[in-house]
Amino acid sequence: MFVYRNPTKAERDEIDAKHGGIDWPLFGPASDEEGGLAYLEEHFNAFCDDAKQNNYRTKSVQDATIKIFVEGRPWLRGSREARVQSDNASNYRDPMTEIDLDCVGRRCFSEAGMGKDEGDANGSVMKGHFVRKRDEGRGIESARDLLEISSTAGMRGQTNARLIVNRLKEDDGIAGRDSVCSKYALWTIDKMNITYWGSIDLEASRRSMQGGGRAVGFGLGEVLSLDKFNKTQRTQVAETGAQLELAGGADNAAPNPKQRASRSEKRAEAQASEALAAAKKAKIEAKKAAEEAKNEAQFVGELHKCPRCKKRFLDKGWFNRHTARWCASRDSRRAALVKMRCVRSIVSSLDSKAVEERDNRIANLDKIEVSMKAKPPGEEVGIETKKADDGRLIVQAVHHGLAERTAQVAPGLVVLAIDGKEPSANGGELAGVLAEGATKVVTFGRPRPPISLHGRARKGLHKKPPFKMHPKQLKWLEKNAFNGGRSQLRPKTAWVGMKAKFSRQLRLDTMTPMWLEKDQISDWLARQAKEEKERRKEAQKKAEAGPKSRNTTTPEIERQIAKKRPGPATQRPKGSTKRPKETEKEKKRPAPPLPRIPKKTTKGRI
Image (cartoon, rainbow, N blue to C red; front, side):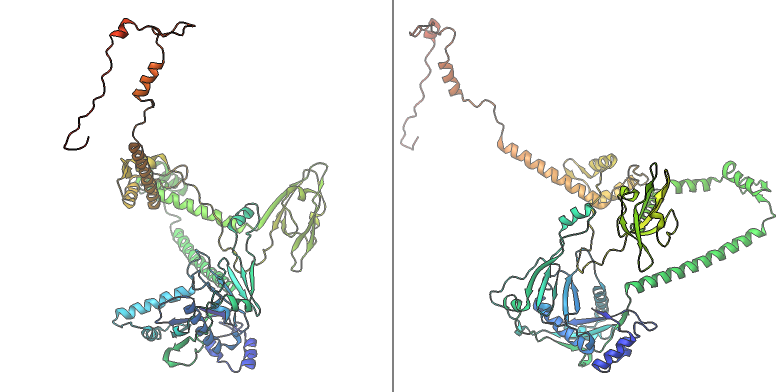
């Protein structure tokens, strides 16, 4: 996809004088003419029979498409002025894809989670056209068939061609070349050097943003001269020689752009559509109110009759009081109670309120309201202001006083209002002395931050809110979903059953439905299965180890200890060296049996 500025009428005249006559009706109205937008957009669909998608294939595509593109648009052949953006595929992260293209000066990569762009959407529409033609019986065998089918799609801003890749010219690049730098967010190429720019440091950015700072870590990386790059890091030395075969055998790609709006133009168009819709809605409401007033005027003089008890009332107030309190309709009362207690309506109202609060908070992020109250005997405000070129009142300096004590006022802030009114031209209200007990409320606006360099962080760092399960939810899951050490229900079946069980119940702590989502139930079942598996492994290890006895002594060791320990009857007298005589009981004790010695046999060994 190519996006470039739509030249104004004066710029088109200069281009004609420099590059010859350009067929400007093919480009549509100029950006400063009626119906013209700020940009032009074109899509090149290159079909190829070569299925190997590497850096050589990517270089071939860019060499062929950009060469034929700038031939029909010669004013875009500037030196290193174009920018290329792609995803993080490996075949794109090679500077060789742009190093030989004089018009390309910068390559950046999309961040994860950014989603698809207009090029992917255009490709999906073209694929749908191919599927319809295939279902109609049109065979698709090669890139030529795709080229013929795409030519009949009738889509605006499309150039269809067949890419011819010459694999015979593919080489291995510089022998023994250095590895290509991979830790970068983008690179820039000028006439002399190629510069790699490092990615953002997430941890350092997190700490900086928690303290009120900005994201950090993005900056200048490695700078390499083009001569050194060509000698040490080229992955392809020879030219690719890739060519494009255009539909119908055309020699050049005729311009076929479509108008593309800028951000300001999109914003203005959206505001105009909203204003038109609001005017249409107001007209319908006014017409409806007029009809209701006309209908009510017809029955002003009539009596009010209760539809339930058939009583008549002259005053509408007594009639409303009668139908609301003493003779209320049971069906309407039941419907009102159901609406009041409906979980879906409660959740919807809470969601709308949360969205409204978030929108208000975002709308007031650039505003600071500072309240200053003077102590006796009075204090200076201490704010010095100056008038900017655009007429705004800017804080130039903060001196010792009330403003400095609040720690909310800093130089560079814009004074929007003082006590709910617009400030004077010179801001004299902020330079004087505030009387004792008086209060001054000043509303400041933060200036618009400078435009960050291309390739900075595109997504914020958000902390996932913790989730705590309700006891009722946990009890139901343990009883029905996971019981006895194994899963009883699948996540989807458990979700359906839990939703049926708690269909009319609401958590009072979070004001959310009592039933869980299918992903939450799946995560809980996975955790339970993991814990059960670990518990069984631990039990198996204990069973294999066997029971361990606390007494580590064997019976033989215990007998030796008993022999060495003298008993009360065999203790030697103090100072005696003779062994005491054996008692009668010890003499009569039989000797222990001798161990049995096995007999030798002739049949085998013992």
